[in-house]
Length: 334
Image (cartoon, rainbow, N blue to C red):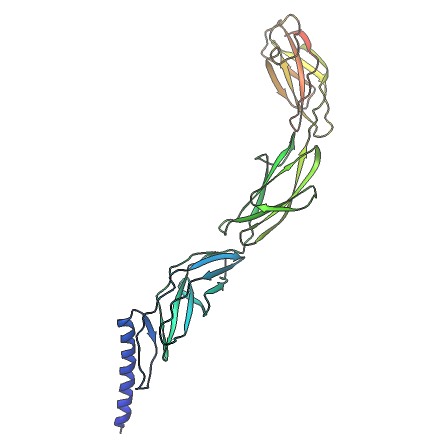
C-alpha cells in the first residue's frame, strides 16, 4: 500500500520544479536551472544583463586576452560570475573582468561572455555579450629582403637600399624587423625596415630577422650584398677587317679588365659611311651592337665597299662602363 503523504510530497516537488522553470523563462527572459524540495523556499525572478561590450586582443603568441565591463549586481547580494564561450562552447568561468584563453590551434575564434548569478539552489544566466573574433597566432612570419626594390643577387654599382619585410599569412600581422649590417650591431624597428648599404665590397653582409605583432619570431637570414664602384678598363688594340660575306666587317680587340665584378661584355659603336674616323662620341657612332665577354665580332648589314669606323666600351657585371677605346677604321665592308 502506497502512503498518501509520500504521494503528496512527490507531487509537490514536481509542481515546484515546474513553477521555477515557468517563472524564469516566462517572466524574465533569463534561464534558470534548479530544483527544490523545500516548500518554504521563496523564488525570485531576475533580469540578468550580459556585459554591454567585450574586447579581445592577441598580445602574446597563441593567446587571446578578453576583457569586459562589469554587469550591475542585482539586489540581495547575489554572487556574479562570468561564463566565457569560444565558438559557442564554454571554456572558462571567472569572477574577474578579464580572461585569457589559448585555443588549440592557430585561427580566428568567436568569443562571447555571459553573466551568471547564483539564485537559491540554481542560477540565472544572461544572453551572450556582443561577439569578438580575434586571432590565435603562434606561427612566425616569413621574412624577405629586396635590394633597390629588386633581387639582391648579382652586383650593384652604387648605394643599395636594403628593405626587410615580412608576411604573416593568416596571422595577426607584422610587428618588427631587425637588421645587422656588416656586424655593426643589430637594430630593430617597425616592419618593413630599410637600411642603406654603402661602399665597394664583394662581401657586404646583412643579417636580418623579424617578428609578428604577438612576438612570433623568425630566425636570422644572412644576405650578401656586392658593390663595385670602379669602371673596367677599355679594350685595346681595336682593329677592323673585311668580314666573310658581303656587307660585313669583323672587329677585333684585346679584352678590357675589371678587378672586382669582372667584365660582362662590350658595346661596339659603329659610324655611318665616312671618309675618316670622327671623334669617339655616341653622336658620331650611333649604331651599337652589344656582345658578351669575347674579343671579336662581325658587324653585318653594311654597304659593300663603303667605309666605317668603330670603337668599344667595356661593361662590368655591376653595370659600370669604361672609357672609350681608340677607334678602328675607316674600313670598307666586304
